[in-house]
Each structure stands twice: as C-alpha cells, then as structure tokens.
Amino acid sequence: MEVNMESATANSVDIYWNRSAGGITEDNSAIIATFIYMQGGNYETEKYVYNPFGEILNSGFSSSSDGVPGSTNYISKTNITIPNNTKMLRIRPLYNKASIKVMPVGGNLPVQGYSSRCAGTLGNLKRVVEVAQTNPQLPPIFDYAVFNNDDTGLSHL
Image (cartoon, rainbow, N blue to C red):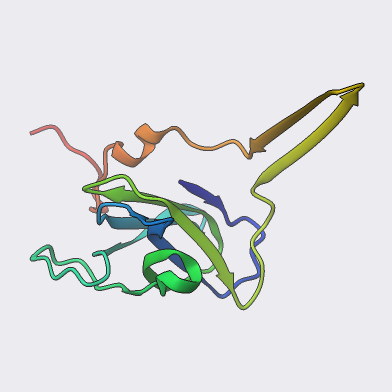
C-alpha cells in the first residue's frame, strides 16, 4: 500500500492492521512501514517494522498496541511521526495478508484518489456504477529493489 504524503499537514499517522469484523479475524501479520523523504537533494528512507498486537516474536521488531477492535475493527495499531519532507509512505504486510488503514494525526493527508457513484433508472430497471481511481503508485517490485545502506555504493565482489 502506498500513501501520498507530498502535502501532508499531519504530524504523525496511526496505522491499523489485522482487521477483525463480522466474526472473521485475519491471520496475524507484522508490517513494515517505509517513509520516503528528501534530505539535502537526495531521497532517503526511514523504516519501521512492527509485530502484530499480542505477539511476542523473536524478530527484533517493535511491539504494536491494541487497535481497539470494538471501535476500529482492527487488532493492531501503531503511531509513527512523519519525517520532514516526506513524499510517500509504503506499508507492506509480512507473514500474511492484511487489511491496512492509515489515519492522520494533528492534520490532514492529501487526496489519495477519487471515487464516483452514478445511479440511473428506466422504468423498473435500476443500475448503479461505481468507479474508484487511486493516484499513480510505484510497482510492488519497488519494495524488493536492491538496497544498500552504505555510502560507498555497490561494488562487484
């Protein structure tokens, strides 16, 4: 999932995951959240990795809090401060599929897309058309691109 952060006024975001609604609970997933931001004319990343709520795994991941399933229908929650000059936030579930919800705290997020609903009736015949269009997003392979956390660059061994 990708969230456009280009003109966000929020100070932080609440991220909810592992939906529980209608008697159905998703399998527990961890998440990795990556902020992509500009610093000194270069793109930089800041990554956060969280275990699902109530899971103590030997993964080195941070713990999440209770998403309060009765009010939000999500089991896991975390709050992350948005780095300055953030362009986008990418969130990927680990271990299992997960429904993910992102809510701004202390401001707003820019428009993420558009939705239209149109209904028409002719006699006894009624039709409804719904269309949703999200902003352009990077392809999923972006999350698996070569990563080097060394200032010297890649070298051939």
